Length: 309
Length: 262
Image (cartoon, rainbow over all chains, first blue to last red; front, side, top):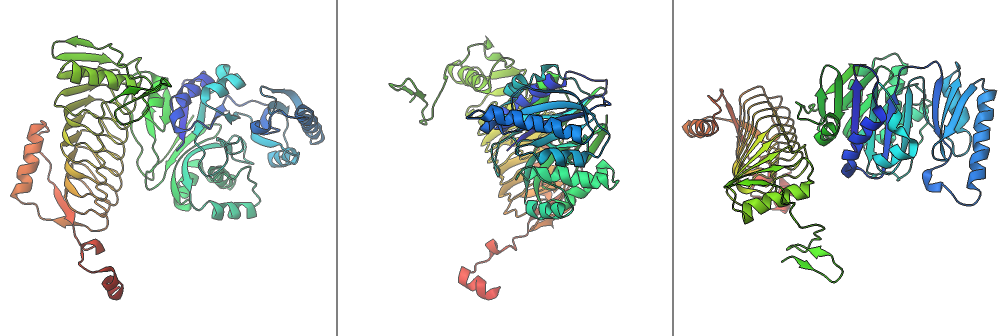
């Protein structure tokens, strides 16, 4: 069991960090192991990279700080070598970093080059997207990463109860749809043909950061988008291509979508008004944001919905 | 009986840990009526307060305002009384009840009235999946749509849905009635053992061993009576479905004989 949530503000950016936290914290009972966010702000000329140099479980210990410092220096060195101009870099945690760069080269090359550094995982890359995720509940991640002031037009989030993979940051959602900029996915469910699709996508040149079945959805959609397919159509294809039970949310710099499998085994509730679209695994999360009785609906089985932000 | 151990841990009558067994005593009681404002109360506190005023104070009409979609509200009430939710409860509302007449002026999440024994639950809005799972008796009336697997493992009682029903509604139904005024999605009545399902709208597909049946006078009388009780107007034209009883569990073969036949 996991919990997923999404927000679109049609009337401009809002306090997305605090809002998603309220929703995710209200669903802590659906997954206390890790919490993650994909924030979307107005597109920037600079590319934002969120990356980690170690798992939180590895944090501390003999020589840890020196190892992180060496890895960080290597990141900066490789950014320079690949032609990226580093504007800012900082870390809230000591192992997860946020950097802003000027870069107009190939994002896949950049991601692969950085992830070649031992322990380095690129969590997100893009002009609009930032993925933040860590172990623990939403309130603790908000505090750890100072998310209270993060503003955005839309966002998705996830609380995770680990079932088939580890309690670690690599298995936490959201997943960035490597190597496609600004695409992120959160998922509640299990994909039973995970290995088949993983082998297929790996043969096509895609890499995976984790052993988590949910990562397949992000990479699968990225491949479809890369081929020129629109998001809604790609999501409809996924209903036939994936076996298992799932409800997932996907976001891009200007779209957000939901898909529900044919058994409707995983919940989702939806509220839509002129200025706001909110969705979550449980209505209690919508109430945590909206704070009053509102008309909501449960999308049915095999339903795919997308919104333009 | 609840008891306090040397360690200070309190156990309830079932031997389960009871971290805080005290009701909040916040209900406004006026004779046989009471109002509980659930705004600042946890699920546990709301249910403790509800049980206190129904059982200990003898109140027969309780209104719960601001339920805030909290889960498991109004569960395990085993007494005739009236409970009104002004707003939407969350998942598992009114499970295991035996007797109350419940009115929900809002929507409701998954698994409404699981294992309900008797009484009634009327929902003015939609209900999520697994509504009336393992329902034993009483009536459930949903004025909006219901989600997937409504009435799964239903063992009695009646579920009336004025809107549409999701996939596998009536899955493994064993007894009782379902009346769906709108459309029914795929797999209606899949693997049902017994009971009757009536549908007014389109049916995407019937499940395994769910077959059409003829409506007779007793069906019309039953449906009209239920609609009259709940003020639902005139029922639509309905089609009836029942178990075809052709699955292996209806033959009289021993396992060894079945192997020979198959």
